[in-house]
Image 1 (cartoon, helix red, strand yellow):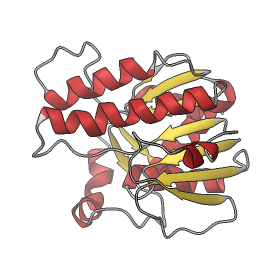
Image 2 (cartoon, helix red, strand yellow; image 1 turned 180 degrees about the vertical axis):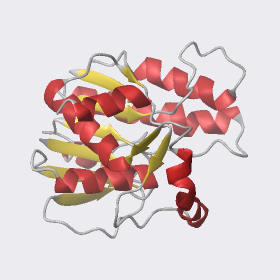
Image 3 (cartoon, helix red, strand yellow; image 1 turned 60 degrees about the horizontal axis):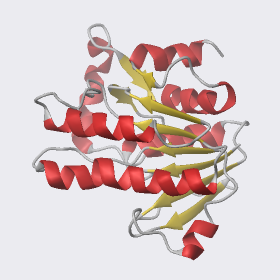
Image 4 (tube, one colour; image 1 turned 135 degrees about the horizontal axis):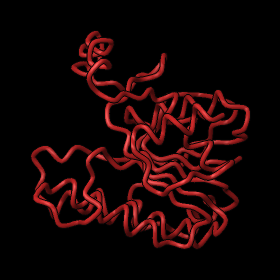
Amino acid sequence: MRVILTGVTGMVGEGVLLACLENPAVEKVLSVSRKPTDHVHAKLEQLLVPDFRKLADDIEAKLTGYDACFYCAGISSAGMNEADYTVVTYDTPLAFASTLSRLNPDMVLTHVSGQSTDGTEKGRIMWARVKGRAENALMKLPFKGVYNFRPGLMTPKPGQKHVKALFRAGLVLAPVMKLFLPFLTLEQVGRAMIHCVKSGAPKQVLEVKDIAALVSSE
């Protein structure tokens, strides 16, 4: 399969990238991002795009002929107002995905959302409402399939470079935290995305246990 991947300079996107590069089912990965990644691989091609909402014709031409998009770009809502957070979390993925659905109607989209996202769009928590709006809007696009991942806590793959120092330090507590909280590895997340492209999934919104089940069923 040929995959478009966003968010490679963040922890989730980088982990999914490494999982894709290692997987024999993936023939090519096109990283679409604002900043380059320093990973180099025969399968990997990079496309720098300053604004995902405004794609020039020459950029669109490079986005055709793909089987999947793994949308892993995102940002923390900490310190952001709802309007600014909406631009990044709703407007941007929806604009980019709308273009991809037009260019690749047989594409499968997987979108990294977040645990406790509010699918009703009416809750009190701002980030959860905005992510819920994004999930619902993406599921209406004419893709072959759309799957929203709500992975919660994740541990990085070996070799990842984009892991914040505070998070890396907290990983020493991961074995204990796993006793009380649902955890996934980014290897599992990447493999589950690939599974969605190959075989689909039983539901469009996938919680931690659903993501883990996709991988265990392989």
